[in-house]
Length: 277
Image (cartoon, rainbow, N blue to C red; front, side):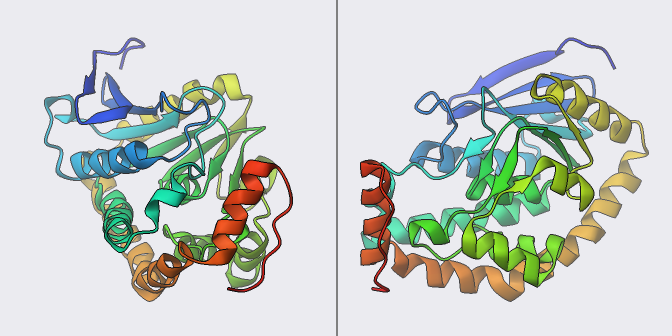
């Protein structure tokens, strides 16, 4: 399939994600110029929505005949959680409504992408980044990477699909430990549990993800896509059970005193003190 990208390009409506193609494999790279750790700000949140919408309907010539997507991050992180500087801007009802709608569409569109997605987890995947990584089809994970959902630690209900995908992969008891306490899922543990297909040094994640992608791309495309569609119905059932509930419960938390305290404590580099209001 070749070793050099056949084509690559940026998209004017996506400022934090770029696409490149090697043979049948399209690589989407998260690179937020406003954050060396690819934190999710308004632009990256929007771009995740645009990326999965485009991949779902395949409306670009770069995607013609593509059989696998590799999704990875630049630098030290895949995506290191929500940008704390953005959170205070989300307290108005209209902003929260847009956030809820866009967040819901990101996850549903990702599950509706018919060609497989291999996640090259080059570094931490946190919050929405964790949900997106866990909803990919194969994860190649750096030995030093971790998957973390810290919603509760910042005074928010675990939305973004986390309340659905963690229990499905780990079981309810283990999932609640990770979601309630924000305990990291390490690379070694992810491999043991079958969440990660391979772990390797961070510098080898890109090559490892491409190997898995090319293995999948060599299979019969219609059979691969049909099988993925069938399996993803189970993920959709889990989302139908808890996704809207978790998102609805999360939205009021953005205006809670506990969330404001978590943001202030983060900025001031201290432990937050929560009061349940």
